[in-house]
Image 1 (cartoon, helix red, strand yellow):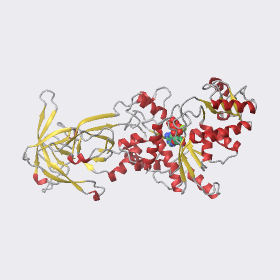
Image 2 (cartoon, protein in one colour; image 1 turned 45 degrees about the vertical axis):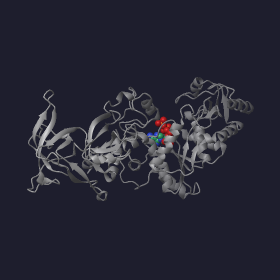
Image 3 (spheres, helix red, strand yellow; image 1 turned 90 degrees about the vertical axis):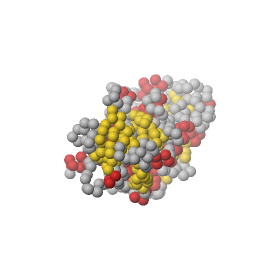
Image 4 (cartoon, protein in one colour; image 1 turned 30 degrees about the horizontal axis):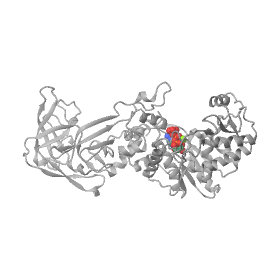
Length: 570
Ligand code: ATP
Ligand code: MG
């Protein structure tokens, strides 16, 4: 797997910005920069789309230009207003603004129809009665030229009449198409008389039943760009072979001509970024929906606790290139940590509680201890956390028979409780049947309040804790990668769903949180000390039952990878 890192952003421009600089120098578009983001509303946006959004809207911002949001809504059978609305919400959430330039390709259907008529009149388009299978057969292959359709030389009059009747609804679905008359021997298969219009009696989410013929992507896209006077039409590499067709339609019609530029799409390890595959995960119930926090969709990432700042930083760091690669998901997680470390308030939360009784602490006493809200930003102040005789600590922070490198709590050993006291384990209580440790008996040293011993003695570990009487209960959902292999879609011999991680969600139902978290609202994000960043779930969390999603653990694998690389190259 290839891992790419670009840290020093804005040093040395990428190739797209270099093209734009050159066009500005030669005054190609009269000094204008006008881009667009053209999603098809057939699914939710994912992190790959974010790369395209940041690129298109980012370029518009940098060059004092404009960027349109345009729905490429030419396939009514797969599209839906739910997707339209989610896309609008997601682009806005990322922090971009299209002003009053929200467009739909379907708004251009009449104009596109007129352009098609023009091409027919020029003898550059014809109605073809071959079946879809025949069209495929006639197209030929990369090594063999195609064969001309027997309908290719229909008269202009006949073509005009048939196309008009296609529009009028006289013919059944797929019985005829309108094709561009280009070159059946072209080495580029896209130029072998591509289909421009198909018959589809389907209701469109915007135009209703007005149309029963729908234009295809290649015909629609270039002309929509032209109508909106886009200067740079930025798209992903798979459209490189479509560029001659993009140019052909515009040249034949002699209309305003934007420049198509292709860049490598984002691939991310341990996930899939194809709407078709993501749709499958949703429809077949592998996840709970498009906004499942394990999904690489913007809706899923947001629910998980990702911030727009972290995603924009990620897109900035990966940059744009001409060659496909897989970006390590650890980089995305790293960007989130960097952002949340600065901003997220800290909290004490015990995910797998183990009861601790401080034998020498009075039954009815409660002390309020001062805790720092964010050591990275002292302006966030401090708070009080209650301490009492019965506490919870993390079950994993105790071992009855600790191996050599385990420095946390063990029988006879002393550790520090964060913001509180030193405690020492004096006894272990077990379930008589299972042998499971159910409680620790400890003593505390009142002289160590605040976390230091006056006699200067040291401890090797600091644990988080909560007071049992004051703790609030919560459910915490721990997420791992959705797939067990870096490139789940990369194998031809197996289905990507074979690699779904069965442990991608672990639900902890009996977590204990410091009482201050009672004020946490859906979408709020905290750092649970020593564990990670956690976001209050916007769907399932209620007043009675708090539910947190783990956005990301504290341990930074990306920072580790970078350190290792620096060592080996440095
Ligand atoms: P899919 O191929 O997954 O079904 P799509 O790429 O066709 O989806 P669109 O709605 O057409 O989805 O995409 C809108 C824009 O986002 C296009 O310009 C497309 O090139 C870009 N885009 C889509 N996926 C990625 C990606 N992984 N990385 C960068 N840009 C992307
Ligand atoms: Mg597309």
